[in-house]
Image (cartoon, one colour):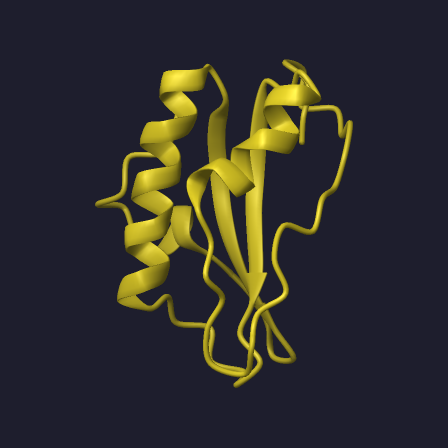
Length: 101
């Protein structure tokens, strides 16, 4: 969670999933930033497999969270995929997704 000047004001674990999936709702992701008066957020999740490619579900969830965040006045700056091989930015690798400006 970030301020309007992109200063870090909080980090929150929203969900701990199983080996293959994590069921998440936009309200679960955006409740903390909304209550914390965050201006923007950076999303992150891990791929235990080590694969840094975004799945279709990852991309779909990112799009939904951007739209929901825009409605609430919380910008989604990026969504990072993290693994034991490093990390990958969905914003950087998927230009078709329009992140909040």
